[in-house]
Amino acid sequence: MTPIGLKFYYGCMGSGKSENLIDTFQMVKAKAIVLQATGSRGSDDLNESREKDKLVASRNGQSIPCTAIYVDMPSDDLLSLCMGHEWVLVDEAQFLTALQVQTLKHISLAACVQTYGLRSDFRGEWFSGSSALMLNADNIIEIPRVCQVCKYNKATAHFRYTVKDGQLLVDRAGAQVVHKTKASYVSCCSLCNDLYASENEVGNLAKTAASLIEAFSDGT
Image (cartoon, rainbow, N blue to C red; front, side, top):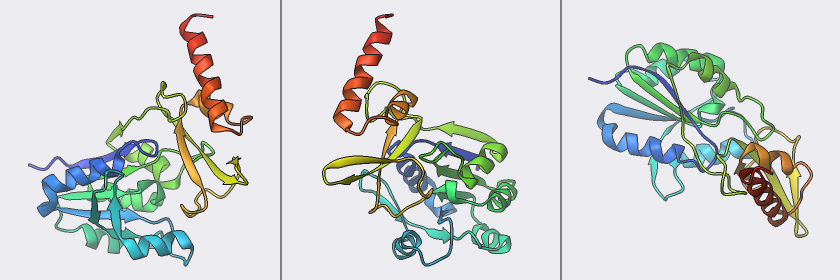
């Protein structure tokens, strides 16, 4: 019997969310539909790329086809997409609208709905989908990863940066979503995230964070 309910798997970038989704799909694919939230239906670069690809891709090289969920998709269309499926797997769930989460909650009364996404953005603020899922999900599961900077603490945040003339520039106030070719992200712990507010070089930050952690572990 398929377990019904709405689940939200959240984690920082690189934590293995897409890999988890793909692994689940491989086990139940005859009964499943895979969806991917886009955040809008405009002609911006980000969504043009997603419309073209229509893939859930993990960093280990695996990928599976998916169907896009646009921000203005009517609830009836979302219901029709999921009708007859025992499993509904949703990638990039942070881009869902609150209404779409409510629709998925309704669908989860008769199916297992598993959503995967980020909890918060690089500014530490909610995405619309993640905040709604935190309120409505029957089960909330963290997929952890280690901080990319200090390699010690659990990553709980992100910072966004670009490189210009050999200098790393941290973006603290830009748009919530930009095309992946225009910026890069680092998954980090709270300590390293705070340190990055005043540091500009990855190497210096890693050294500073490691020194602080060593000091804490020594009780000094």
